[in-house]
Each structure stands twice: as structure tokens, then as C-alpha cells.
Length: 614
Image (cartoon, rainbow, N blue to C red):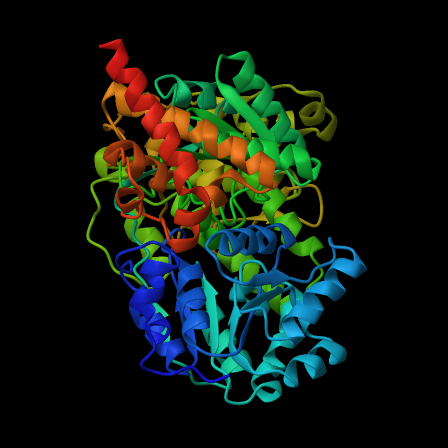
């Protein structure tokens, strides 16, 4: 089936409006859509929340034939398919969570030409049988989502993605669109070489989110730091990221006991428990999700006011993706992280235990080094973050370093004292033991090792334990000390550290990293674009309740019915007719037909009750 180029269905703007209900493309989308719709390959690196999905869904409908979408998560595929069906698009997925009969029925529809978009995992797609079957059909487009997974140098390498490098040969002449929210230059080069044979038009959008305030603090008392951070943020939606499932549960319990509305989310929960937590977060105000990295992919909630990292993220790529879930409405948001030496040690251990080869481990350690350098940055934090992605920025004025300029002090004498204590004790003990030596603490470990007779014993009593722990962390971050991640976190001198000890290098440190955390300065975090009068707030709450009810009836996530942006627009515009409802952001022809009257009735009832109460 070849589409008439003069047909409205060949016009991306017509599809955008009639199917998806949007009047215009977001910045960066239209060029990618045009590239794929015209039959050319594209690699798109777009910030989280920039609208990647539309960049392949629109050209999939412009072009004739079947579009194949490769996605890494079953839940994400199911959500996207449900959203497309609600928009009136014939979309399906074949995946391991469905029964054989269901998958066979879907394939019969695909083979009959009744499906426009087919979502598959790389494992399901890259089998000889599936490739052979698809080659007998007209394929109009292939989209690879989360494409960084196919690069061994990417932040979330998934070996199953590697087989996708044969797609060009299997489907010659079919445009391939590759999409990710984060890929540094090394990763992009690897993707271009593998998937596109070395040449493709790249679209790399700006990475900056100037409305998000970036803050990093050394771990002092994480429990108290989190509670203090949330003290004047009651009623705001946010995400707390933790390293483990257990930590996510514990943070949720702590916050609930402290009067916050908090839920846990991690891969160990049942599908129903995860869905309930996600729907609550998407539907109601002031919900805090305490989660592992299992939470976030595919979530587009505009009014998330903060992301708090209670543990060090995997690397800067992951950090960027995770903080990108806050402030999508353009209003002020906070990205707050606390980290400690143990976090660095744990992350290095994860890298070495991955078993993916020495070269990948070396690069992952370098990525972690970049994250530690970001955490210890003496200059504008946003410059450091954007510089990692190859983007230049002036000092931002919206990070802790810019708002509270960092003082740097010569710490060469103290640094040599640390290095001397390490060398004298055999370069096999961790930071806590070295701090004990400097503080003159007669711990069992110090006494049993005979370290109380060292000349450095008690030489650092003028400073607190927190001072020495942070100082040692900065020495690690500065590359002076090396952590033994294969052992038990022992510290040893690096080549730079030996030069420091020999008097060849100075060392400057950030005293702000060793002071007790001060209460953060707040910026106004009012939700830009959200309804501000009490009536609109009340209507919005009712629309969200209706959305949740419909989502449960249909067995889909709440945001698939309508996004928060759509509900906010409804609450502001208060449409009373279908013609007015069609003008609401995110209302396409199918949603207008299926859902219009249901939501209009709720708005009419609200208007009548409000008028009666006057």
C-alpha cells in the first residue's frame, strides 16, 4: 500500500493535530520527523521529556507499511501501545508477558496489514524466524528507542541490543530512527558505526534545563538531610532515588512516618503494586516516590518539583536522565544529591563485578570519575554537567556553587599528613581508619595494628571527623588516592598522590564540602502554567480522580488516558462543548470521540455545582 503524497495523512502537521491533538511540534521534533518521513536515517539525542516518541510515531503514520519500534521494557511497550490505541492508532506489541494465543492473534493482524506500529524487544525481533517473517511485509520505518543500550560504551549497555547492527542489511532502504535521552560523544560514535555503517544525520538537542537548581552536599546524616530538604516542600511532588530496594522501602516508611505522602517503587514489587504507586504519583498532588532506577522511564509528569538522590547515581548520564524528571513544566525545580566515600566505593565495586571486560570497566570508571568531579566541582555545576555532553554554558546562577560561591583553600599540608598516615600504615586501610589515626582515637583496630605509635597519631585533632572524611573524599575525587574496590575499600596513593607527598604537587580543597550543611536557599517553586485559583484546583482534582477511575477500568496507567498537561489545560479552559474540548492540549480525534463526553460531563457538573453554591 503506497500513500498518496497529497493525502492529509501524508502531512505530519495534520497527523500531529488530528491524531495526537497538538497544534505544533516542540523544538527539535519537526526536523527529525521530516528526516524520517522522507525515508532517511536519523540519530536523535533529546533531553528527557522533549517528546522522543512523537518523533517516530508521526513519521510511522506518514509513511506506508508497518513501523517496527524496538523498546527495552515490556511495561514501556504496553503503555505506549495503550496510549496509541486510545489515540485511534492501530498499534500492537508481541512480548513475553502475553500468552502464546494472544501473540499469535496479534501476528495475524500484523500479517494482514491491520497494524501500523509493532513494538518488539530486541530479543523478540532479532530471531531468524521473526526477521524472515517481517521481510515478507512492507516495512515503512524502524525506530530503536533507548539506543544507547546497544553501545558497550553507553550508560546502560544491554548485549541483546548489539544484534540490531544487522538491521540495515536485513531491511535495505528502510529508514532507521535511533533515539536516546543521553549519549556522550564516544557512545554516539559507537552507535553510528554499528547501526548506520558510519554515517547518519545526527540531531543533538540542547541538554540544559535552566529551571532546575543543581545542588550536591556531602553525606552527613542522610536521614536528617532528606527530612531537612523536605521540611518546606510539603505538598510538592518529587522522587527520592536510592541505590537498593531496601533503601527505597526504608525512605518511604521514614517519610510516611514524618507526615509525607510517600510510596516505594522498585522491581521487587508486584506489577499491581508498581502500577498503583505510579497511578497515585501521576494522579494526586504531593506524592513522593522513593525508588530505585526502576522508576521513571516513560513517565511524563510536568509538575515534579524535585529529585533527591540519597545515593550516588551510576554516572553522569544516569544522573542527567533522573534529574530530568523534575521541572518539565518549566517552573523552578530542585535536583539535590548527597554522596559519600562509601557511595563511590560501592559504584566502583559494581563496575568491577559487571564482568563486561577490561576496556568497558576502564571507561565506566572514567565515567564515575567524571561524576565525582562534578560532585566536587569548585566552579559552576551546570558548566561541569553540560561540558560532559560537549555543550558550553556561561555560569548559570542556579546551582549551589553559583548561588553560594565556592571558596578554595590551600590544603597541601593536611593532604601530605593524610598521605603520610596512609603510607606509614601500609596503604591498606579505609578512610575511617585513617581518620582515627589523625584524630588520635584508640579504636580496637588502631591499637591492634600498632598505629597509635605512628608520628601522625593525633596530629589532626584540630579538625573534626567529618572534616577528615570529606577531605579524604576530595583527595579521592582529585585523583590523589585510589580505592581498592576489589578488596574492602582500602586506600592507597596514586601516582599523583606520591608526587603530592614528595612536595611536587599542591592541593586545594573546598571547605564548603566539610562544613555542616546549611539550610538551602529556596527559590519560588510555584507551578508555572498550573491553575492557581481554588476553583481550578478543585476541578483539576476531580478530573484526576476521573482519569484514575477510567484507567483502572481499562487496565492502563493513568497518564495514558490524559497527561497532566491536558488536565491542567481542561481545568483552565473549562470546555463545555465538544468543539471546545477539541482545542484542549493533547486531545486528538480518537480521544475526543472516546473520552470527550465523559470529561465534559464532569466539567459541566462542576460548573453547575459551583454556580449553585454562589
